Image (tube, rainbow, N blue to C red; front, side, top):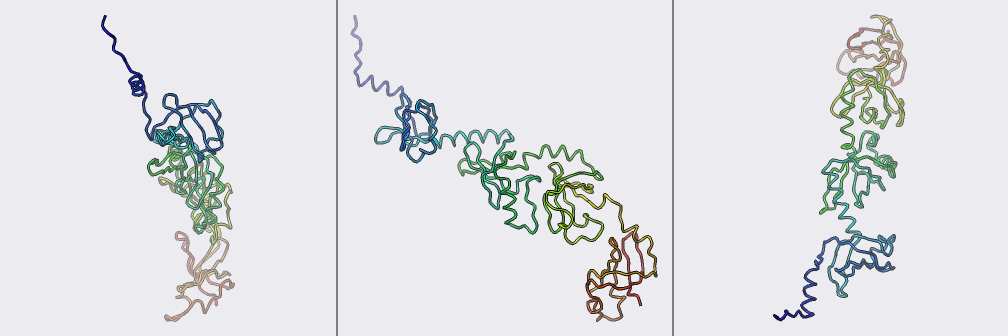
Length: 355
């Protein structure tokens, strides 16, 4: 009988050691919590030894219990005391980045809840990763349209969104640069395309005022942004749009133009043009009373009825190049005038000072 080859204890231990996969920095390992102490958490990694989560992550792991299974990321595979230095936080982030990349690749719509705001946008956290929702990527419903780009008012409007769930798509995710950007506009664009297809010039729509600025009024029409230009608010002269509407008002308007991202709206075109009826009784040569509303180098504008403004041209004030309307008229004064011409198609009336 042939002698069996004898295996020494050292060879047996070496063989066993070779069969155990050695962990390296960056690996994700699983184990069972052995103990949870104030300054450290110990985790049984089985054949790979004992892992240690350091004091700096104690607060992150305060809800762990003995016997609980956890995943952690390897920071140092073999410290001086033989334990494996682990990070629970990094493991969560690594898993979070994987989830984020998958959802971005699938163009999936997700929900985030802002926890803070600055003038540039909203700070959010998703899958354990902090990200940013820029103000430029907010939908018409949430975009802070404010007069004169008032930064304090913009921040106030953004702060009102903190704590509220917002549907978004992931616009950019870069684990290496720790960059995570979201877009609400991208999340709503598919639905907006369908709504745009249902709208036509001439339709009457209802919406909520989202911003009042010097040049007009922004309106949210079922997620689509609309603009009522100052010239389309009323048939009468409008100096300040805020005299007519305020943020939060529900209004009706007529669609007068449609482009790829915005509706052009008119409030005044929902009612008959009072100019036409108010000039009905005017005739050339008739005398009218009016209030001087503006004085310019080329003449003075005169309000002769709520919807009708006429012009006294400088040529009607005297001969020569040295005629100065500001020396002849006073702002807001009332005077008698004579109607020289009525251009109904061009909506223009010419006056002279009555003698």
